[in-house]
Amino acid sequence: MFRAGELVKGFKTRTVPRERTALAIWFWEIDRVLLSLIVALMAIGLVAVAAASPVAAIDRSTAQVAVNPLIYFYRQLIWVFIGLPIMLVISMLPRPQARRLAIFLAVFFFLMLLFVPLLGSTVNGAKRWIDLPGFRFQPSEFLKPVYVVTLAWLLSLRAKDQSLPVMPLTGAMTLLIAAILMKQPDFGQTVIFLACWGVLLMLSGLEMRWIAMLGGLALAGLVAVYMFYENGRQRINDFLGIGVQMDTGPDQTDLAFRTITHGGFTGVGPGGGQNKFRLPEAHTDYIFSVIGEEFGLLACIAIACVYLAIIVRVLLRLLDEEDNFTIFAAAGLTTQFGLQAIINMGVNAQIFPSKGMTLPFISYGGSSMLALCIGVGLLLAFTRRNPFMGRHTVVKWSGR
Image 1 (cartoon, one colour):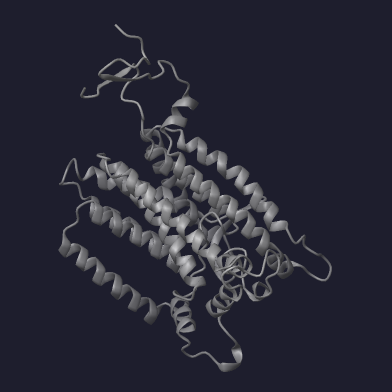
Image 2: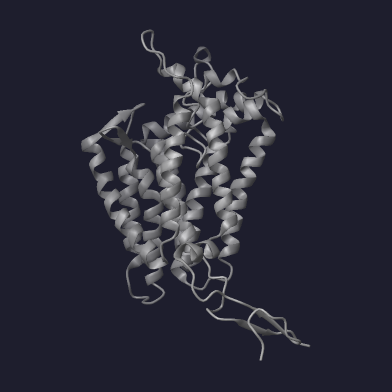
């Protein structure tokens, strides 16, 4: 006989605690690397918002009232302190409970999205927000992660019953949301919703002919946007320089590109940027350019690597996953997160037209921060793994 934890000739033993608290179970099951990368992005975001906050403060100051230069940094700090506990609490939920929470929130925020045309407020020519006492929120931001999980659940049902009309149902739901978003207008969010739906369809085993057909429809949709959608056509024309008068000066993406390259590889130093004061929405849409000017292109590359590391980490986590819903949900959430980052960085680097999209966990914004925390909390819940094979001592033969 041997005691648990002893090394016996020919055997390797590992002791597993018989009684563990819920917090201890969560600590051993959570992907701590993924959680660390997310927290690192939050910290980077606070530094970036502090650098961009004076720009937004000057824009909102008047001759009678001066706004604190760091007001947006302080607000972002509050959103981080609110969002981080929400993310951790959601990550502690078992998968079935996390799925049910996501479906409930998807229904709720879809109803809120329907009320935007009636109750919404217009900001910078777009009607995307609903004002509450002391808080303005964007329903589409909150809908993105929970709707992806809902799509994953519906598509996972197809594996159990091939006769269920899941794909037409998810298509109709996604197109309805896209139509509502295009009326706001919000072309960037529409692209995210449609892209996540397309990725989940491919993962669910959609036939190649249907994938080719959807690709053709997507191309036709882009042409239709340019032909009939004034907001989209204007952004594309500005990006391509079509119809731009010489005396109007550079457009937003050109200003962003000049700002991001102004600091060179090492930057001009924290607080030393000057081009950032010419940027519109420097603390949200174009915060990546502010980082480039003050901290250098090397800092931008490092941030891009952090986003890449998050995506790769999740994909590696799914390699030996067998549950279809978990694969679809985690892959969909990662697609949404990664695509949003790629679009924002691409706009700042003058690769894409301006889309008014925030950089995840780095741009300023309460709706964006809380919605991202909900989405990552769900992602952490779905990727949790039990590191122990059982509750008692595990004995393995070493081969000697």
